[in-house]
Length: 155
Ligand code: FES
Image 1: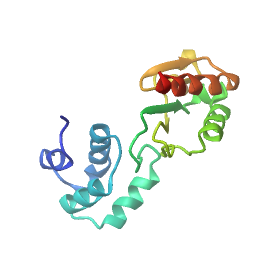
Image 2: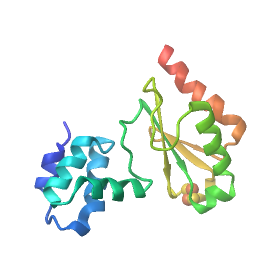
Image 3: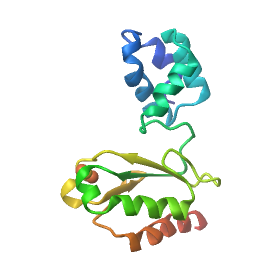
C-alpha cells in the first residue's frame, strides 16, 4: 500500500510555503490526484488558507482534482509534439471522450492529462495510455486506439 497523504506531509524535510508545489506533486504522484482531503491537510500543515491552495493548484495544468480513470491517457504538448500536430490530437481525444484535460469520463474508464515533453521528441507526436506508448500516430488513429482499450473491457 502507498503512503497516506498525512504520511507524505509528516515526512517532509521542511514545511515552508515555497515547497507547496513539490509537495502537491508528491501527493499527486502517490495518490493519482489532489482530493479534497489532500488540499485540506496540506493547507493545515503549511498553515495556508485552502482558497490559496486551490488558487495555486488550479493555475498549474499538471494537477488534477478527479481520480484517474482505469486508462490514464497523457498526451504530450511539448514543442516537438506541437509541431507534429498534438493540438489536433488533443482536440480529437476531447471530442471522442467528451472530457477536458484533468477530467475523467463518467464511466471511469478514461482520464486525460497533458504533459510537457516525455523525452521522445524524435518520435513525435507521443501519447501514452497507462505507460503504453503511441508515437508518430495521426488523428485518424485516435478513435481506433481508444476503441482497443474499450474492447479490452469487454473481454
Ligand atoms: S515534445 Fe513530445 S516528447 Fe518531447
